[in-house]
Image (cartoon, rainbow, N blue to C red; front, side):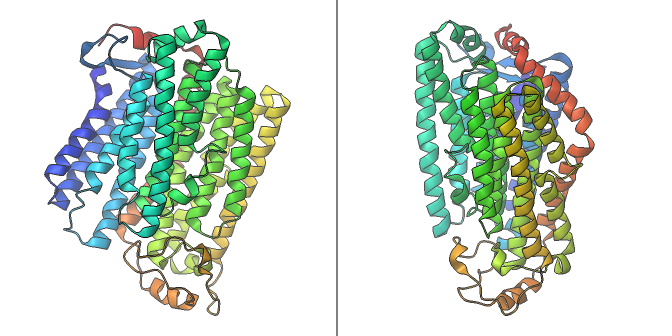
Length: 530
């Protein structure tokens, strides 16, 4: 039965190959992609139920023992991350169908997008399920290789420029990761997580610290932790809306997941608690100050993405059961909410031709449905009760207060301040894009339009054009159902996290206890091959 752990990795790879074979048929590619990701969602639900009832589900590929083979493990943490990420991936895929049909026609094959997207899904699944450091590296490289293609789709100048920055930073982080893997293997003779948890404790403290720093720097680049987050705000907003959404929702969270896994399993008695706390505080504050200063919806969301990584890192730094539970809950919440907000930004761009706030206004009157599907996740992101964002922040705040140290209390204050500034940034978007009427006499400032060119089927308004001209174009646009319905579905899913907060916190509490105990995971990896 444990062979099911292989499905989320192998099935998308097989689907990608089939999509390449069917590259001339857009309809066939869409069918294959939907079937594959739907099957992975069902598999993720099964793995979460089994992991919660019976403990971590493990498999050693090809029957090799764990010391020389590749092991995959689905415990409560990895199964929950797999489920949320796959639901989000499926919704974004459906959204991309709607966007592609509207832009290019119903029968145009997206021969590159579909196989690449499924490979990305396989890489994310492999990273979540991997039970050894080198296979985690492979998972990262698979998803990064796919992301290089997706982030430059369309080939516009802005996308190529931003994609170049993203590729360079990713290659540097991958080089750090490979160096870290080599150093870990040289020091311990293994890269298996379970064995490392036993052998690292026997190393001198200085060697442990160097290995921990190498891994932490690597994963902090991928998770966009300050000051290693400089690359994200300029890389994500230029990509097509579904690509930006899935990147924002998933890629940084894979980095955070890797930090959670390595810190709790390999370095439980860390000497870097103070460093992690300062990094979380600065990530929250610097990210949200950047968001407040922006006048483009996508850039505002990109900076809030950075700032809210700080909440998750704060829980990892405190490392109590409540803190880790709050961090896991917040990861699940943020994957969903951040993704749906970028999808809404794509709908705004389709509706109006821009995401620049200087060009927008009056959407609450002209597009009430779009206004609602923005307002709900926006309030959730800001942490307005009773949404899941509020519940996650309360858990993290209580964990910080229970810790009682002066730095933890500063972190709680920073989290409250970041939440208030997030509300301010969201309120600015709401007021200028949705509530405030269009100023027909306003001249548009194009200094913030860094993504010139036709991104979604119609040209951006040229420099100096009055807002009224843009609005005449906007009034003619209607939200395609193929894009709107998946967005609404994801909004409903995000609200479902609030309605199911009790059972979900039950799972995250048990997951955090399992992380602290470590024994169930170690025994699952070192047990007899399934």
